[in-house]
Image 1 (tube, helix red, strand yellow):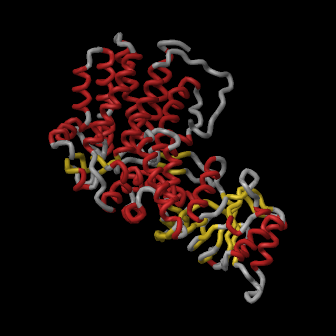
Image 2 (cartoon, one colour; image 1 turned 135 degrees about the vertical axis):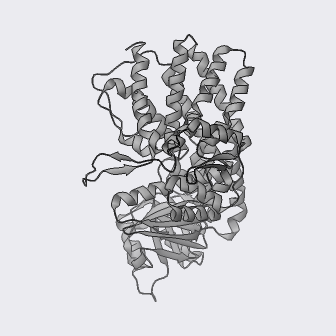
Image 3 (cartoon, helix red, strand yellow; image 1 turned 90 degrees about the vertical axis):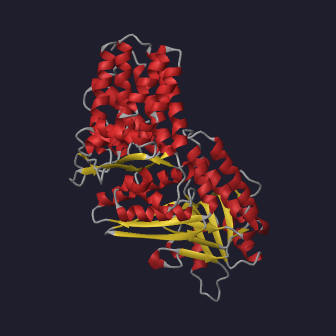
Length: 537
């Protein structure tokens, strides 16, 4: 399918998705009902990424093209930034509409796309100038509230993020009734599975705690008694009263030996035991073992290392102050002798994060490793009566923690779409200074597009003259926004309407990228039997 039909079909699909998501913007935004689940209930959703993922096809190949462009960019925003999918949809749609209009008028769309790309850099720099650092848990709670729309949950999330810092992992535990509680645990957290219920020291809480144990790291599957006996002997030789075995898996005769020793009478038992199967795979598995070795001083054992478990020596086991298994994870408190090495690795990872672009796919991995090594774990316990409500609260909490981590690193800007709107003068000034008319046109298109989210939020709030309120916001200066609850233009920090600088910047970059791809599309090839994707990419 060629022009002009191509752009018409793309716009049709983009409009359908943008029209679906635009009403969800802002605190007065609505929800989207997703057709009946297996239980016969409709899902009520306000998270753009989840809504986009539910859309597999609109039933028409012509509209599917634009819809899938939007689905992909919204999903990428959710995965990388944690929030901002609906805002991205509104911006991408406006970029495409304005760009197509100027393209029809004779402007070069490729050169305009370059102007949009340059404009994104101008806006990102302007956002940096507008940003201010987080001053406490109140600011963090205000940002969390834009995601959860729940005062109590936002306050707890703000407190946890503030106390634990931007890098610490948080484990979320769901309850089958309304519940909200938190717990703080010292140590590094790794996803793991306990290999037998007999290793629990507190069976009623499904928890195992060992104090000052030896620890063995086996990057291999342990199935024979000959693979675990040397580990137990090594632990006894170093004077430990307990042994934790972290392996790719422990089963068969090896597991049987460990369980029988764990069940032995207290007077005969020489070691308290805990065996866990580490969950990460691929690079994540390699990093998990590397970090555990750094925390404990243990030697990694396995076929790809100097020794296997079957030939382990006393110097191969490490030491740790405390190990706790609970809620599908093991928490390891580092040995005092390893503090200097850990600080050195933390400094290296922090520098990596500074040097790595926000949209780099390796950045979340560095952040997770940093969170592991900084040595604090939060446990958030939330509940609701209905299964769907529990899933929604869990997803909101996960998004909020991700966004608050970015807030602590890059600061916050006025929320409610106001920060982008305050960047318009800088963008128009850059367009005025640009000699290439097509590039300048692209910058002006972006200036129009980044004003759209604020206007949409005002419309959703029932403001009858949004353009007038927008002028009041501009006149109020770069710290102002619109407080939907009071119905007034106000200082963003005072009224707690805040967005995260890095999230806004990432969201804009992804929205612009998707719109530019759509603008540069001149032909569409329709497949007779198109492949459907459950995972947007």
